[in-house]
Image (cartoon, rainbow, N blue to C red; front, side, top):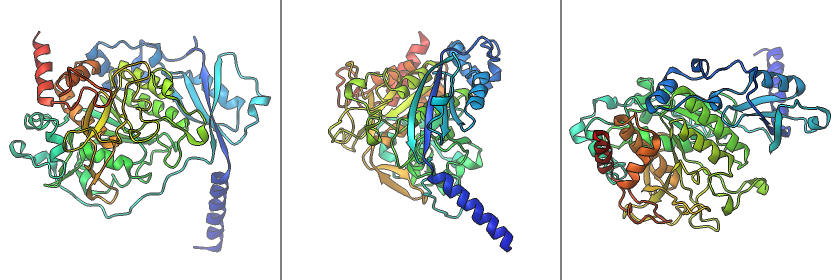
Length: 468
């Protein structure tokens, strides 16, 4: 390297370091309406929804409405001109807002915003979110082709209990392993999913359909922590005779919405944007092993009274996602042992399928958050193994981990296999059948919800409904 090149690199490094050390402010700007001059129309959905998304809505009889229209681009351009220091991060068509980031906290004193602006909220103050740099550079491993699995004698390895406790193995034997189903995983990072053996079959078959980091505003998600890697492993992980997830043949979008290392309300805005992306590309399910109750410095923290499915922005967004035809599966939370104890958001949302954690004795694990919601609804909905669940870590090893973070994807993968057979049904109908199949269906409780599902029974219930 020449002296000139070295100086250039040093200057770039110093510039980046300075930017990363600066305090930034994130604002959510809400608009009153979509605007009469919005170039998008409900009559031309192909301009903002994929063919797969349109087909999903048509299949379920869901009409495209004004909430599907993107934020008016003319509004966005005008905001960018009025606030030159602002970087537009995320947008929400469902809730009609944009999130901007700026180092200038005084702009609101000097700028008069247009009449179509309804509200402005400061949602983050601090250092710019950045990668956790939790990347383990392991060599790429070829792995096995799971398309050649013998359906009559499937070997689940360490995942045997978490599959068979749901009676999911019978659906698998009928060749329902998530084929043609798309799952969007909203999480905190997917370290080494692009390298390790357990996800070779996804890469080989091009079943990682896309990635995006809504927290860092970039496409890279493979160096941002291993939580999403472990979550994905519960659904899609495959190492011959060692582990097979609940939906190994499904396709996946990997979306980072969690700003690892902090807990702020801005992550709810990331999540809503991620859910809308999932809708636009035609995802059938969302797995979200995330939950929000208390925030750093208590800025915007919730009370139990707020866990009514209507207060938290993320819960409102999650309910809309289900109304658009996406089955949203969310961890109940790990607060059962602490002073909070209850489920968080968006697990409190009425239409979200919230999953608690059990052990191998089919008992609720003490850390698993409980219900009901503050307005008296049963939560969690159902339970799955969340104590010593079989997962894949960032180094590619099959290991065990505990938390409702893992009971949720175990359940999500199972639901994907059921949805494979009944894709024409709206999410609520599939959810109700799974609840009715559960071992606590007639006497649901605040601790166990409807209990542990039996997917063979749920399949039968839906099959009988289809014949009527």
